[in-house]
Length: 241
View 1 (cartoon, rainbow, N blue to C red):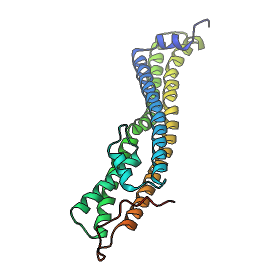
View 2: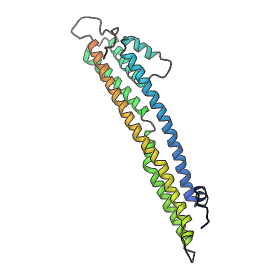
View 3: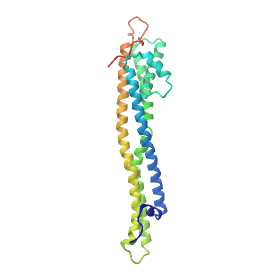
View 4: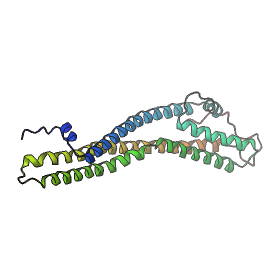
């Protein structure tokens, strides 16, 4: 009854399979925490960059000025700025080709922005599936280690003539450590996955709203095909909200 049942001692005396399971779960847990911290900082910076560009966009600057700034940006532009640049670039290319149909201009710009949007969302959602996998698989890996540890413990007890709680407890405790470590790895990953998924959904809605708003601005500035004139007036400032 004086046996040391601390977690370190239990892990030290556990079977090789259980030790491998525990090492795997600890490695997965460290990797998931690395993803969590990286995702927290990345989403925070992304939101800040989007908000900064959104303020500039609605501050009354011209579309041409915004496009020039986005084209020669030294730092990494925000996803919203890259979507804007993609739409403006396609719009100006079509205009240089003397495309006079307003619908064609807007459709080309919108398709360019949607393609840029999909690329941005792929980057934003990267490594999110890893957290989902950790949250769903880790408890089962821990359960496997527990089952194996219990089997190993009872196999060792089969050769004993007298079995008491003192002889059974260490083996069962060693096995249950695997389940505890599995839950330790899974719970933070599930919580972080749900939080990030909600934040990314909000970012996606904001980007889609920007695409619609910018498309409306281009539609208002586009020159109708039946009217004479040089084309859309890109020198006009972005319409205020």
